[in-house]
Length: 154
Image 1 (spheres, rainbow, N blue to C red):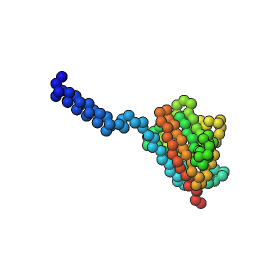
Image 2: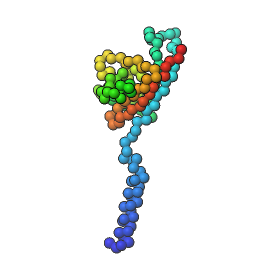
Image 3: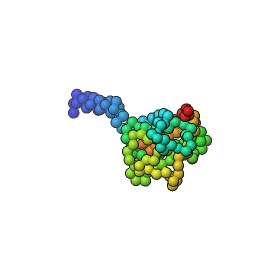
Image 4: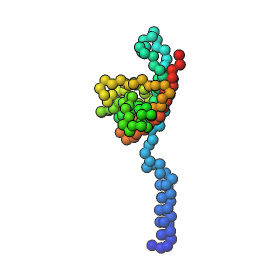
C-alpha cells in the first residue's frame, strides 16, 4: 500500500473512533426517571370507602417516564437507612412471575402481579415531613427516588 492509502485508512479509523465517542450514549444503560406528587384526596361520592382513621399525609403517587414491568418496590425511611444497612421497609412488594407494566402507582396500592414479601402485610402509614426513599427494580434496571410526604390540611 502506498502512503496515500495509509493516510486514508488512518483518517477513516479516526473518524470512526470520533463517531463512537460522540455517540457513546448508545452503550450506556437507560436510567429510570422517577417522580412523585402529593395531592389532597378527592372526596368520594356518598362517603363510600372512607377510611376509619384519617391519614396524616396527602396520598403520594409515583410515576415513571415510561411503562415498566416492576419486580420489586421498597419504601424505606432515610433516617433508618443512614444508620442501618438492612433497614426495615415500611412497604415492600415483589413479583414472582409477571407483573403488569405500570406508568404510575399510589403508595400502599395493590399492584397486579405483585405481592407483599410478608404474607398479608399492610403498608405502614407515612409520617408527615419525614424523608423516605423509594427503591424500584425491573428485570434490567434499578432506580431510587427520595421524597417527603406533605401533611394533610383539614
